[in-house]
Image 1 (cartoon, rainbow, N blue to C red):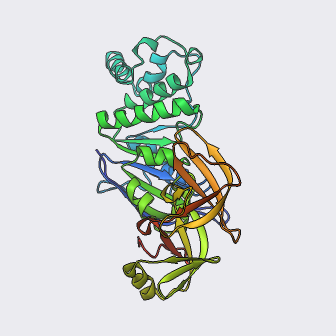
Image 2: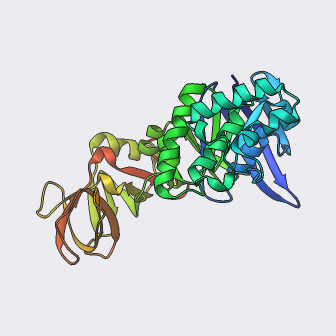
Image 3: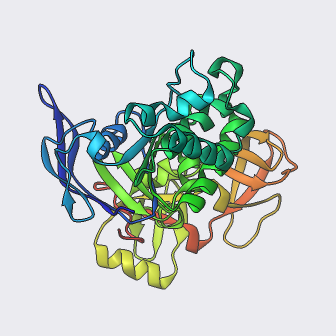
Length: 363
């Protein structure tokens, strides 16, 4: 298979729009790498550069030790699956899956063998004689995957392939793509704006924002040790709570509230010599009870949303600062009630207000 390396890659669209800014990325052999970020961050451009559909303005692209920076797509042995299925409506599934092989003048028996093997792998053998118009969205996406598999690529590239599917089918297809990766053992690069897809599928995640990688790491690393405020806010749903804060000796002060830091953490912040900061904690890490408990704050509940597996609670401190909690199961309370919350010290995050870098977990 292939180890991919992007070295000091820049991409500028005329006249002066810089989409990728001196990025470096290594994708290991057989790794499932997910590129994630908001719309316009440069993730699809990065994927197109790997595919050879776009060329760099500056920098290099390597497949193993071979420089493929200006190599055309057909010579890179990559297969790409797009958001749109791009199936020929007048051809049946068998013809759609084998069309690229036919253009390459591969023997008809070999084409049929590859198509039938891929169809069996994807569970669509009974659909080979149907036209795309007779298929569901999930079936069409499997056909698009099969069309790529028959080419025996060394790299699989996915550009938001599940965006057109409904929520239930997206979950099912996520599982199918993960199983496919385990069976084929091919280097895969997957682009999405959906952080849930990224967290559930990736071996590692590369988080892009404004043309730069903000953090590259495993799902656990980017969730538990976000490099900066952007990563902390982008990964996780509901998003992390953030409050402007200041550091005073051993305490963090946010609004009129004070948070007593463990001595080791207080020493770390003292060494940083940063006074203005941002306190962050994920909604699911806040402890909430109807009665006071150790180091708890009294809050008023302003919105209570029961979602089945969890209850989303919006609250306000006495000084009007608001936040959000994700409580497991059913939290038996209603709007206007008083409750008590606390923050486990091992779950808080503190960011430099100016640079937004995580002062506790440095990347």
